[in-house]
Image 1 (cartoon, one colour):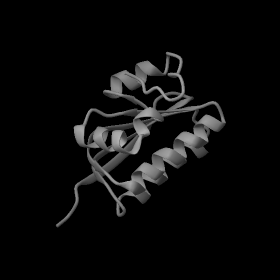
Image 2: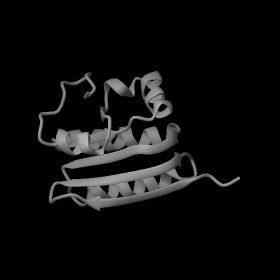
Image 3: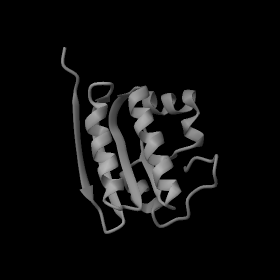
Length: 127
């Protein structure tokens, strides 16, 4: 059985990079996801948007990628913004407590708009 997975990324502007994923992020697909996210950070992007609106499943390996990216960006006054409305993925964030750590918005447009607003207070997820 093959797992559906596709990832792509784009530079939005000089400070912002977007990584989008469709399908499942698991132990097998997380390395490509990690490479795309860390590549944006290594390239000096201040804001990394991770679009998970078409993602159906995340496991601990993908959560680790998000946590590491969030920490690296915060250390240099950057931001990780996650676009996601998938109930299964949001539930994983809630169960793990990441909904209180990560800046999560409903979709790509909301993530792009969030760049212009101040980040939410620590411990408060975005709307």
